[in-house]
Length: 247
Image (cartoon, one colour):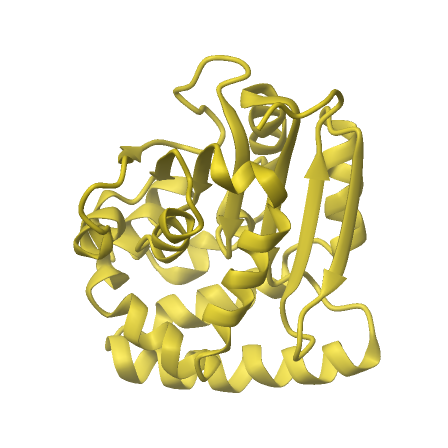
């Protein structure tokens, strides 16, 4: 990576770190899936299935997989009966690394774009799902407002993420996971230890689940709900738009 990992840490007044984060993910793309499975002991796939279920009827409509990475959620959306999937990520190599997973006959569109400036018309999709990517987006309020803009009335945003822990159990488990497991195993599998130290640090620098839910309400969502997954290292947040869904 061209810039030191420390340059990616959010600092007041610092320049936009998005180009460096994009470069980091492009570098990780070839080993990203294998590292994820080992680090999470396969739990990440179960979390993703629960996130798909939380979309409700929207999962059978037109859905955006935001911060799609290597397309695990896009594949699950196909299996859930989505009419069309827009897989959006700003790291083109991540999308390319996962493209082979898409089953034949499914309408999945790979789009390289920034979550803060989505190339969609207003009211374009029935649902948006984002797995473990939004904490890497600078100016997260802009991404939240963009999600609200492109969702149809009654649409849902489902976010699966590592928020800053609040309960004692999640603090202990997530603290150990972030500081030891993720950097050690991720660095070993990828050969790029600084990236996984950054990813671990990005969790510590991120907001709590409650703060994120308030951010959604401040940017156009009518209501939110959230819960910890099992084990309590990841959490799920659902934001709902005003109006009635038509899926």
